[in-house]
Image 1 (tube, rainbow, N blue to C red):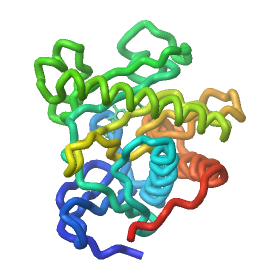
Image 2 (image 1 turned 60 degrees about the horizontal axis):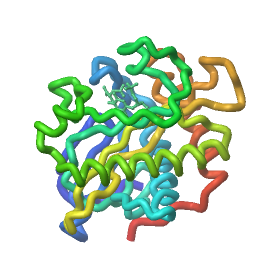
Image 3 (image 1 turned 60 degrees about the vertical axis):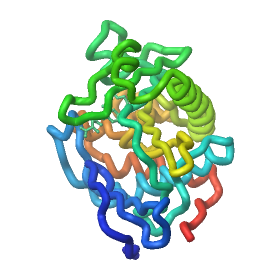
Length: 251
Ligand code: TMP
Ligand code: ASP
């Protein structure tokens, strides 16, 4: 079923955001089948990816809400659509790393697979035209995107989310290697978790195999041309589904 949303507000690489016809404080988000990597240098379509990411995100947002984390998620509308609170997106990407992988290993001598306890929190400036640069503490301060108190609030939320998600994924035999979060401010001025939490934005390794390629169940399958992208996302949804109650519907 394709919902009947209001006008398109914004189209990103993996989602479209529409006005809600019911409320000015709400939006309708469509998850696309498009996958991009390396700042969209690499791009492909994967049948069913939108549905899988939408469903996985819905389960994870609900799980976090039950633990007191404020999120933009309001409910599922159909397979690949969800209702969400409208937010002013804070142009930062908060990356939490539990195990060294990806850019951390390209940019530093830290070896892939190194345990990073306590988790490493990296903040990037969200701007594709600048290539989403990694920020230093002082650069973040100079940008004046968030004040000191908001920075503390976002970091505390991100670390709590990491604790909750890591524990949840362990139960379903997945290692949460690293992931990216985005936050926004809702109409009440509250900072809430926005965007998505899915294999597009997390690295997830299957604990049921030690094969370094087979264990990858996230967008690295696309980044590294490993194939079976949708199968991997499907396996993540299957395990998440098996451990959670069905997500609520939007309206
Ligand atoms: P990185 O190793 O490329 O820095 O990525 C760290 C984590 O953040 C990884 O789980 C993928 C996620 N991520 C995004 O969701 N969007 C992005 O644009 C980037 C660069 C990373
Ligand atoms: N999402 C980013 C892009 O589209 C980077 C990535 O996830 O690798 O380019």
